[in-house]
Image (cartoon, rainbow, N blue to C red; front, side, top):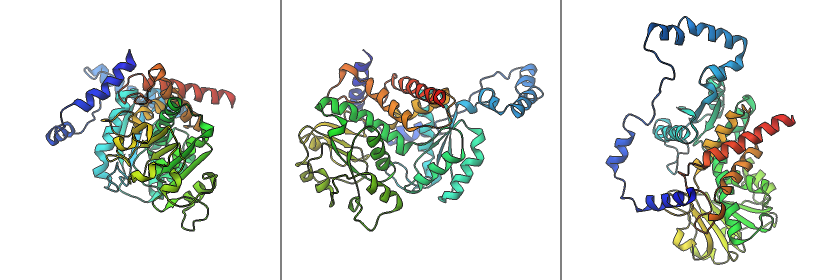
Length: 401
């Protein structure tokens, strides 16, 4: 059975010998990407067709019918992976050049899991206006834009402005990819503990890109009681130090009006979702509800290590591949972009994210268990299932318009 193989993959990964620095650097030497030809260039005839004079006919046709660029160049299957290097992994602001290995890796995942071509682009600026203008000006080259590792709160404005300016799919994966996989995992974790979405209390630690998106998608999925924390405690309307983004969070979350810190947020909470990079003292977990769920997603060091979390929670997930229930964006973004491009969609909608989460969750099926609430990162069923769900959502939305 495919799911059994997926489960064994995690076990194989955890049992593998340690990865050495030499192995890592050897794998990255020369980069992880290359370009390949789809048409032969072996004869004079080949050259005349692929380049001059034949190419002029295609150029003229595209000038008359711009949509032909999507079918007669690689634009319709090409994603730009764009970063300014300001929020890379857990490394922080390491700059554009140092972020390139991550962007190359993202492009490799696009190709491997969804069959889409992707190009890494790093920008030597942190200025919001310059980033937006640069992306908009280069957009005719691409079928979609994947924003990556851009620090909050700039990432929110950049995504909003780029989406407004372009009629192609745009998504900041640190926000929405994380949120989609969290929702998928939570959907199945709630099946394990037999709790409905509309009755649970959720505490989200972290008000950056991922935390904001997680809070929003949970609300869209029917969770009515979400409390979000930043480094200073619960985000609530009584605080005078809130940014515009956090003011919006305060207005849309925390329905019980609690204040204080992580202890107050976790008192009676059914779910803890950590996307903060911080740590949680064990004492705060003692007052969580029975059959609690803990998603400690900070990498490489979870907010709560799994063996401690398991003392207080029925279901535990992390962002790491060497523990059960890895919440990894690779389960979401390849299929989301593939489905959007297959449908020739002009945007990635909230409904596309919800159906993507549902498609991921459904793959677990009857193999559901506390240690298996989300498919493995290498499960080959995931990207096709997500792409199909997203394409269907996009086509239905187009029909309704």
